[in-house]
Length: 224
Image (cartoon, rainbow, N blue to C red; front, side, top):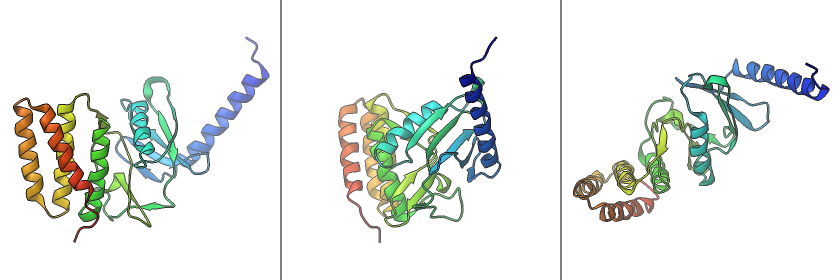
């Protein structure tokens, strides 16, 4: 088989690129149980590469892209997949210059106004039909100037197909936000009432009440 010169150059460029990325991967900027994050060969971006064969990086990137359009997650630049799914990777915006962790312990959970803001964002994602979980400190960064959260890692996330699921999850994150704001009794009443409605089949009323509760959470700007 005769290979065209252009094909040979493309193959060489691909090989050189993989060598550069392998060098970056040897000094990662972050890692977890199922992926490693390292600097991309594109300035201003990082790569998140799967280290586990069953990770669905395309679905993860799709969910992150929705959140990024809302200003809640780093911009997704692209997804690369490989045979068998091993080594699939997402290229995304590197936010380290403007965002920082707020806890010295990666797996501690947000508290106070940080937790309120995180749950405000989770509620807005829930209204878009997205359930985002695993919100420990390793998966959240905060704007150095404003404190606005940036959600990282959409590996434990999914779409909610009906209003019953949306109402339940929206109520859950709202109640979590109220607890962080120091008014857990309000969250407890909301959770119990919405769950009773859902168990009774009153999905529309449950969703309406969940929205009302979340609207109140969104108005909280400071925690004493």
